[in-house]
Image 1 (cartoon, each protein chain N blue to C red):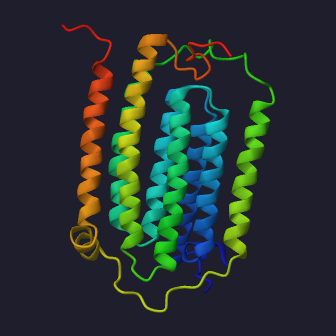
Image 2: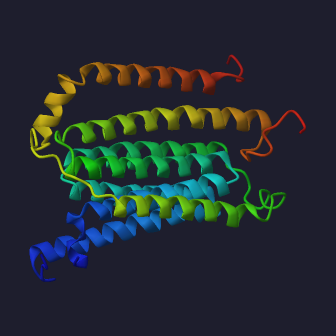
Image 3: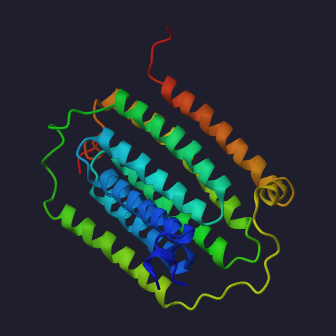
Length: 108
Length: 176
């Protein structure tokens, strides 16, 4: 497999998607702020979308289905970002922090 | 197929490698930058690379939508949230388990490694026939025939999300 011919192989895209998913999962566990967790969740969604598009390009009988599914993932991710960020702003207004560990009323 | 580096296919391969590098660099910045605003910039860089990858997957429309929705809308919304709720960076260090960083790195590497191994070992079989070529007219036709119900449902979800975001942003403020 030539390195300049990588874009014609399904495995290339699967590796990219898996790496994005792994990096996003790492960030989701490692981040302490709510906005940082949201950014990592977007990376996980991007990895899933790359996988969908790769299978759509190389394997699917109907190559519009994966594109439409990716478009719906984008719409849901945009709605999720809007809701989550308004929650973050509301939490910040009440607690004066966006650290996930500080947002706790109960001890335990 | 071994395209020479000075041919059109070779140049396309080089641009594809640059897109992969952009994606990886953006993802690393997004997860490891200390300041949140730099993480948002890294996320935008990563999505530019992902849009290029979509272009190589013969989906220019999805690549355009990636740029419009993610780079143009989601990252701007994130920047607004950072401006409204940015904590001072020196306050948020400490008081966490020192094992948390290495453990999360281990979990991420393990997941990525398992998915890569799965993707490389499985014998994928392409569909014997392709019903269409997945071009933009075919995409629009499918969106307004087979998937019109889902299309409308997604618009309702977006409407509810907008109203919900407004309600959440409004709560707790004075009536003025």
